Amino acid sequence: MSKGKGFGGLGAFIKSVDRAASKGVKKEIALWGEAAAFQFLDEVQNEIIRTKTVDTRRLLNSFGRGDSDNVWQISKGGLSLEVGTNVDYASFVNDGHFTVDPNSGKDRRWVPGRWSNNRFIYDPSSKEGMLLKIKWVDGTGYWDNAQAIFQKMFNKSLDKKLQSWIDRSFEGKA
Image (cartoon, rainbow, N blue to C red; front, side, top):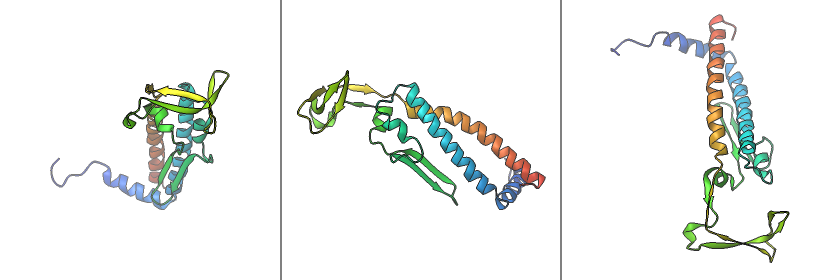
């Protein structure tokens, strides 16, 4: 690109964004972003169910606004939004994990609890339990899958939304 030349239409685009921002589109962007966050949480829940990750439903429920394990942070002026979970084992379920910490130098670990209907129930006060030998458990990739699916949906939605805001600002109706 030679010096002094700009992108065609860039100046008009910047002016339209400035007009749109001064006419309340920032509030619309924030609302749209919040709706997108809900959509992402729904997609994470769908993937937890699809991959059969769900067990006690604690992880599934933590990906809903208002759950005590949910992360939901919004910053209005800077337009940032953070969603996620505080469930401590969420990343292990997504990424995979060893049943015993390989850095401990031990190849087995005692887990207190009891068996009920082919399901182990963890109970730290139990004298019964099971002995876990070191083994790799594959992750389900629920978060990664949801992110990839949502990214495609988000990009299409963002393109449409940006175009509508730009069109409205050019029409003087923003």
